[in-house]
Image (cartoon, rainbow, N blue to C red; front, side, top):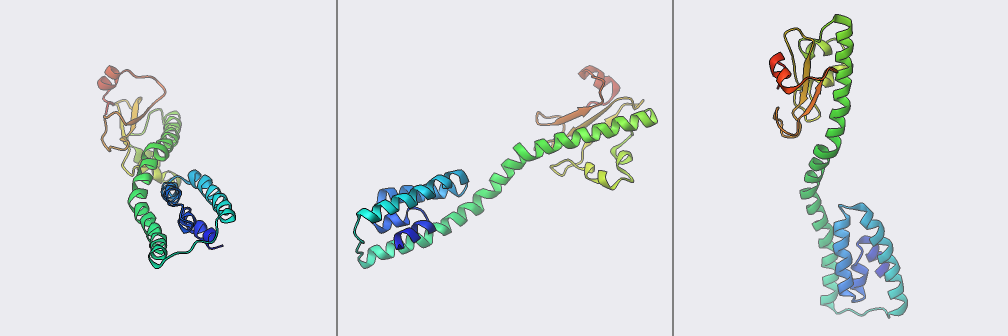
Length: 203
């Protein structure tokens, strides 16, 4: 019963209780990794519980001296603290990676095409594109989020003198316009690089 309870708290502690130290530290290590990769825990917990059940059926109740009992208690107390510290250190990096490489790229593509469609509708109504995004956004509460991209930086928007071409740019994770991680949107007419420069709409 005690071994099962220890295993529920942290997989591997029950194995320490029975003296299966190698397997115990392996399971504790996997549990630490599993704190950041949940599917691993879905394997570790059932295996640890099943294995400790088999061990408890075959092995007599262990007898500990005082030092061994203290070791198990200390490990049981220290491991959660280690997990919390590692989580506090690594979670911001994991969240940042997820935002910059998965969440924000998807969001900026969706939002960018929403702005493009609004710009095209503006062009159909007024015969030219707005001189700035503020003209497109003003008076519409639902468009206020278009002031900044998902990285909370203003979109770069520019038109030529005739306002029949435009370019809309999110500077991406690095915050610099004109680099490889930019997300670029433009009106439906394809413009070459030289034409962009001639028309004055290149970032």
